[in-house]
Image 1 (spheres, helix red, strand yellow):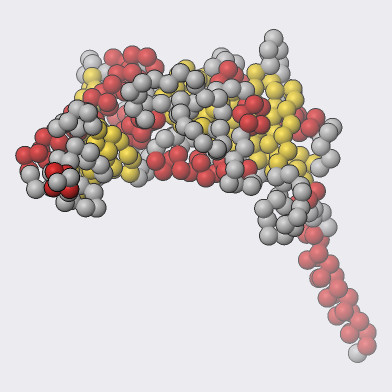
Image 2 (cartoon, rainbow, N blue to C red):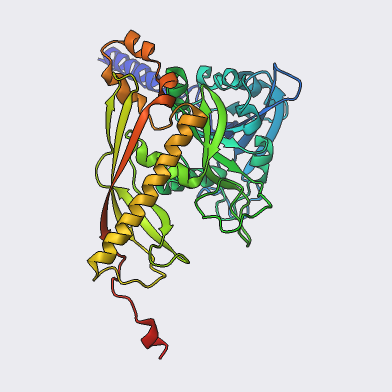
Length: 419
């Protein structure tokens, strides 16, 4: 009996040891240096090297476990030359005591100088080979060197650096000021060799020249002029990539239009301004959103392929500085609707014309729809979407539904108020 009891105890002890084996190589968070953002810059006169910048977050800063009197900085930044993203980790550990890890990398920054280089795609594919870097990291092009961009970014309200980037990226997508820009989308579009990829565009340098009478949405990062005490970083507009290389950039307004023309994106509502048809001194602010999915009809068998695009939009008027009473006058409503429809249609046509004449390709993911028109892959490849797109006949029709005139339809009588 005693012998059986001893045997049972031994078996239980061995079973407990089996559960403990998973903890033998466990390491604490404080033993790692977590890189949350990677920056890549070009090195002058050296084709075999790039300048890597690490933004390393302090996991204890801002957490409930950290002491209120702790003087530890929320971040650490280091820049150095390396042969690749992969070998850079071991070099950084020459000066950083903790083991470098890419497990929490959420942002990948690339300088515009490197992004426009014809060799850029060779360097960015290091991120595809690394097992540590997630494919859904956010991709952003900086006007200046990424090392300068990361060091100059000093948000006042967010203590932890990754919080700032996540929030500003999310807000940019919600309002359409920046495109959705994930690394895996860059790889997919580049390898498909049919469409353009749009990446986020940012800078900490403000353009000194301020254009008079420029509409607020017709700007990119660095062109927003403001006063006050806040962060100098601006993230707005899009960097345009063709065949894995940056070729141009888009304004905020053009970026919003790409959302409306892209059938693969889930769009919310966007804010636009239009000329007031009743008073040229003022503009009308409006909130627009898609009523239904955009409709795209293609006839690619013609000598000149044809695409008919229908954009169904609902619109709510948010401002009325000319004090025109639209709510009770159908004639004025029709004139306003016609004016906005014409202006929006012209803006879309101008953007499509720009993609055909300047970019020679499109950022709307229309090629995904065009593929369905071909029964086999060889036929699709023979059609050569990127080569054919610039000469296509593209027609745009905006279906506008004028819904509301803001929370309060009634307008005050200015003459009576001033009497």
